[in-house]
Amino acid sequence: MTRASLASATNPAIDDAHALMRGTARLLYDLGINAIPEFTLPCGRRADLAGLGPKGEIVIVEIKSGIADFRTDQKWPDYFDWCDRFFFAVSDRFPAAVLPEQTGLIVADAFGAGIVRESPVDKLAPARRKALTLRFARHAAERLLRV
Picture 1 (spheres, rainbow, N blue to C red):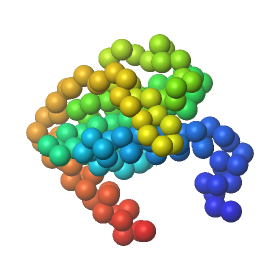
Picture 2 (cartoon, rainbow, N blue to C red):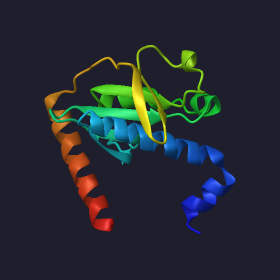
Picture 3 (cartoon, one colour):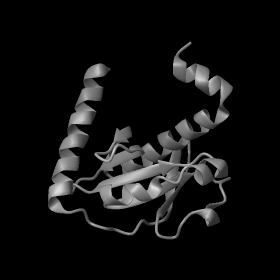
Picture 4 (tube, helix red, strand yellow):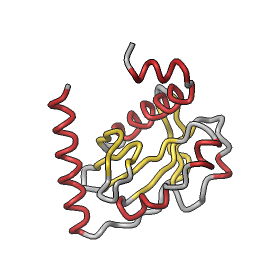
Protein backbone atom coordinates (compact mmCIF):
# COMPACT_ATOMS: atom_id res chain seq x y z
CA MET A 1 0.00 0.00 0.00
CA THR A 2 1.39 3.41 -0.96
CA ARG A 3 1.61 6.31 1.45
CA ALA A 4 -1.15 8.15 -0.48
CA SER A 5 -3.52 5.18 -0.44
CA LEU A 6 -2.81 4.59 3.24
CA ALA A 7 -3.56 8.24 4.00
CA SER A 8 -6.80 8.20 2.00
CA ALA A 9 -7.88 4.97 3.70
CA THR A 10 -7.73 6.80 7.02
CA ASN A 11 -8.85 10.25 5.81
CA PRO A 12 -11.82 10.46 3.40
CA ALA A 13 -11.15 14.20 2.89
CA ILE A 14 -8.06 13.24 0.87
CA ASP A 15 -10.23 11.18 -1.48
CA ASP A 16 -12.69 14.09 -1.76
CA ALA A 17 -9.91 16.58 -2.53
CA HIS A 18 -8.40 14.23 -5.11
CA ALA A 19 -11.79 13.83 -6.79
CA LEU A 20 -12.31 17.61 -6.87
CA MET A 21 -8.83 18.10 -8.33
CA ARG A 22 -9.46 15.49 -11.02
CA GLY A 23 -12.77 17.03 -12.12
CA THR A 24 -11.34 20.55 -12.03
CA ALA A 25 -8.29 19.54 -14.08
CA ARG A 26 -10.64 18.07 -16.69
CA LEU A 27 -12.57 21.34 -16.85
CA LEU A 28 -9.38 23.37 -17.24
CA TYR A 29 -8.19 21.04 -20.01
CA ASP A 30 -11.51 21.51 -21.83
CA LEU A 31 -10.95 25.28 -21.56
CA GLY A 32 -7.48 24.96 -23.11
CA ILE A 33 -5.65 25.34 -19.81
CA ASN A 34 -3.04 22.71 -19.00
CA ALA A 35 -2.83 22.15 -15.27
CA ILE A 36 -0.45 20.48 -12.86
CA PRO A 37 -1.15 19.67 -9.22
CA GLU A 38 0.92 20.81 -6.25
CA PHE A 39 2.82 23.58 -8.03
CA THR A 40 5.31 25.36 -5.76
CA LEU A 41 5.34 29.11 -6.25
CA PRO A 42 8.40 31.35 -5.75
CA CYS A 43 6.92 32.54 -2.42
CA GLY A 44 7.15 28.95 -1.12
CA ARG A 45 3.39 28.34 -1.16
CA ARG A 46 2.12 25.29 -3.02
CA ALA A 47 -0.93 25.76 -5.23
CA ASP A 48 -3.30 22.80 -5.32
CA LEU A 49 -3.70 23.19 -9.08
CA ALA A 50 -1.90 25.62 -11.38
CA GLY A 51 -2.69 26.03 -15.03
CA LEU A 52 -1.15 27.63 -18.08
CA GLY A 53 -3.49 28.87 -20.80
CA PRO A 54 -2.91 29.21 -24.54
CA LYS A 55 -2.08 32.94 -24.27
CA GLY A 56 0.24 32.43 -21.30
CA GLU A 57 -2.32 33.19 -18.62
CA ILE A 58 -1.67 31.64 -15.22
CA VAL A 59 -4.63 30.18 -13.31
CA ILE A 60 -4.48 28.94 -9.72
CA VAL A 61 -7.19 26.77 -8.18
CA GLU A 62 -7.43 26.15 -4.45
CA ILE A 63 -9.29 22.91 -3.70
CA LYS A 64 -11.50 22.95 -0.60
CA SER A 65 -12.93 19.60 0.46
CA GLY A 66 -14.94 21.00 3.34
CA ILE A 67 -15.75 24.04 5.42
CA ALA A 68 -13.17 23.13 8.08
CA ASP A 69 -10.50 23.01 5.36
CA PHE A 70 -11.47 26.53 4.25
CA ARG A 71 -11.60 28.00 7.74
CA THR A 72 -8.24 26.61 8.87
CA ASP A 73 -6.34 27.37 5.66
CA GLN A 74 -6.08 31.12 5.17
CA LYS A 75 -3.07 31.18 2.83
CA TRP A 76 -5.15 31.66 -0.32
CA PRO A 77 -4.72 35.48 -0.50
CA ASP A 78 -0.98 34.86 -1.01
CA TYR A 79 -1.78 33.33 -4.42
CA PHE A 80 -3.18 36.53 -5.95
CA ASP A 81 0.33 37.86 -6.66
CA TRP A 82 1.16 34.75 -8.71
CA CYS A 83 -1.75 34.35 -11.11
CA ASP A 84 -4.00 36.15 -13.55
CA ARG A 85 -7.10 34.34 -12.27
CA PHE A 86 -7.83 32.56 -8.98
CA PHE A 87 -10.60 30.06 -8.26
CA PHE A 88 -11.82 27.94 -5.40
CA ALA A 89 -13.00 24.47 -6.40
CA VAL A 90 -15.55 22.84 -4.12
CA SER A 91 -18.17 20.10 -4.20
CA ASP A 92 -21.87 20.84 -4.59
CA ARG A 93 -22.24 20.13 -0.84
CA PHE A 94 -19.89 22.99 0.13
CA PRO A 95 -21.59 26.15 1.50
CA ALA A 96 -20.34 28.41 -1.28
CA ALA A 97 -21.72 31.55 0.40
CA VAL A 98 -18.72 31.54 2.79
CA LEU A 99 -16.26 31.95 -0.09
CA PRO A 100 -15.06 35.48 -0.89
CA GLU A 101 -16.78 37.24 -3.80
CA GLN A 102 -13.45 38.45 -5.25
CA THR A 103 -12.54 34.89 -6.28
CA GLY A 104 -13.79 32.58 -8.98
CA LEU A 105 -15.84 29.52 -8.05
CA ILE A 106 -15.78 26.06 -9.58
CA VAL A 107 -18.11 23.27 -8.49
CA ALA A 108 -16.61 19.88 -9.22
CA ASP A 109 -16.79 16.14 -8.69
CA ALA A 110 -14.47 13.35 -9.82
CA PHE A 111 -15.78 13.41 -13.39
CA GLY A 112 -16.00 17.07 -14.28
CA ALA A 113 -16.66 20.59 -13.13
CA GLY A 114 -18.31 23.85 -14.04
CA ILE A 115 -17.51 27.49 -13.45
CA VAL A 116 -20.21 28.98 -11.26
CA ARG A 117 -18.53 32.38 -10.86
CA GLU A 118 -15.79 33.70 -13.14
CA SER A 119 -12.62 34.92 -11.54
CA PRO A 120 -11.71 38.56 -11.91
CA VAL A 121 -8.68 38.98 -14.16
CA ASP A 122 -5.65 40.70 -12.66
CA LYS A 123 -2.87 40.52 -15.24
CA LEU A 124 0.61 39.62 -14.07
CA ALA A 125 3.54 41.84 -14.90
CA PRO A 126 5.41 40.54 -17.98
CA ALA A 127 8.62 39.70 -16.08
CA ARG A 128 6.70 37.76 -13.42
CA ARG A 129 4.69 35.94 -16.10
CA LYS A 130 7.87 34.89 -17.88
CA ALA A 131 9.48 33.64 -14.67
CA LEU A 132 6.35 31.69 -13.68
CA THR A 133 5.93 30.23 -17.15
CA LEU A 134 9.52 28.97 -17.14
CA ARG A 135 9.05 27.56 -13.63
CA PHE A 136 5.81 25.88 -14.71
CA ALA A 137 7.44 24.33 -17.80
CA ARG A 138 10.45 23.06 -15.88
CA HIS A 139 8.23 21.65 -13.13
CA ALA A 140 5.99 19.86 -15.64
CA ALA A 141 8.99 18.46 -17.54
CA GLU A 142 10.59 17.21 -14.33
CA ARG A 143 7.39 15.40 -13.40
CA LEU A 144 7.18 13.84 -16.82
CA LEU A 145 10.70 12.47 -16.46
CA ARG A 146 9.77 10.88 -13.14
CA VAL A 147 6.87 8.94 -14.67
